[in-house]
Length: 299
Length: 127
Image 1 (cartoon, each protein chain N blue to C red):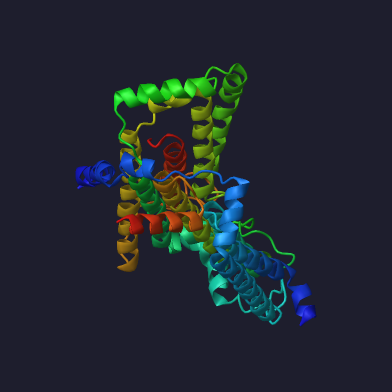
Image 2 (cartoon, rainbow over the protein chains, first blue to last red):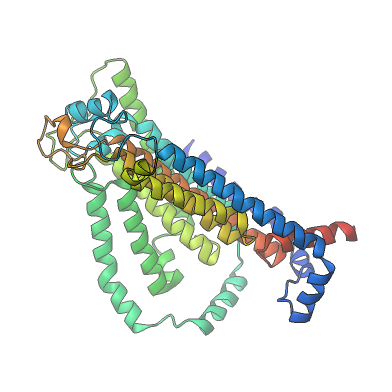
């Protein structure tokens, strides 16, 4: 099953070659900036489309004003800002606040809510990120040959100095600190503000900075496409399996073997810590994947 | 009515930003600017949700009383979870839209929608 999933992503990325626009098509269209005389001719000849443009923009502005007006009209009838008796602060939020720590053993009530009560929702979120990364891979991944690689590298060296000492030394100082901070935010997700999503984004930023300073070659030593696939799929699978177990035992009132621990300790609150780590890994990989795909069309 | 707008000033701001984003989405011909307008609308929704969860004088929902937190000390935690979901979906969709924009640029060498429609019509006429 595991290999099958990896092969599936492999197949998706390699099937892309057939759908790529052929080079002929690219040559066919040549957009160029119009000169003033050409613009004048366009304006004279295309008066019909010009009047349509004007009509369109006027209708668009009127529609936007109508939408703002109706929304503001609704806002003026909303209960006042910051009032504890608002209907939004009902029995649901009271249940989450009063019984949250007893049920989940997580001090951070939001983390307890999104990773325990509503953990399948968060699984959906991580899956959305994974699917978005897969879609971007389908759209942008270019299976380059070695020759194309070398040609591109030569082209790049003309424009940027890869051996910039200030950037390199600065990155050498900052990258470990950012990484450690990201790991701290992920590991303390259940006892302080933060969690998998924010910590993962911080870690992804650290890897992007490393890539900017030291180039693609040294990054691909520890983060290639193969490693990306393995890490992200195993994190998602672990999330799904462990949470299914927890829901199965919880719903059928079977004794769960996962210890809850003392609230406030790092090793506490049952599954929330491992799930936070999984989400952090998925977010980190996706962030770097997006950057890498947009920058050089591969991971 | 104006009184209500001034007491709910966070919500008012959110709705105005939403309208600006919607106008940006409609008025610009450039695809990247359309995506920027889309992100404006997302941000307005986060501001609206966050302001609906806030209660004056209460703290963020991180229990400082250990096992038995009292309801009267914390703000509503549910909008925080909703905003989290919104941010994730918005990031994913922005990346997907931008990837599509890159593919369009590769095919037509322009990001202007009018220009793309013109080139498409030219192609149809040639055939």
